[in-house]
Image 1: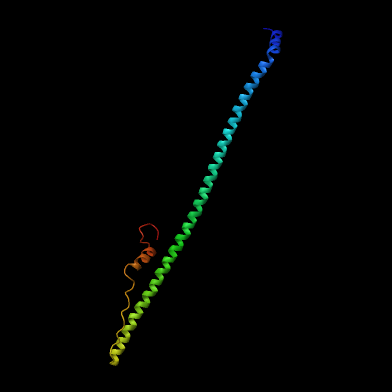
Image 2: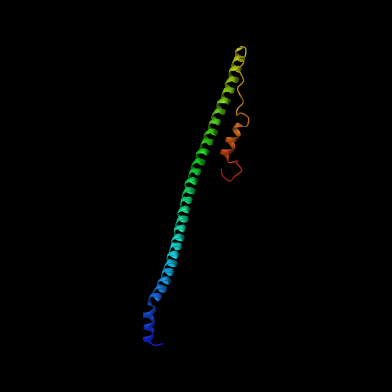
Length: 144
């Protein structure tokens, strides 16, 4: 086949050839468009995953900080309760000692002893142990 025959063939079938080339080019363009869309979706998904991971990490940091602060506040409150329990215990002991001193002074003076109403036992059964255990680190874990 020489050049003249090739040119005459192209002139005769140019519409069919251009239609075929146009169809192939359209198909190839659609494939490339789909591939770009797929790549964009992958990138968007990765960005979304990164954004979700960042949000999850931020939420975890916030909750961890909040938990730490609340744990410190709870320990401070338990220490305050334990300190107040110590003060009440001292007042309880002082009240018992004052009752004994009044009775001793009445005996020395020859007066009948005053009968005081019984003071409740302190600390109440089982209620002081919680604060004492928490503040002294007897909780079963490594913290004190």
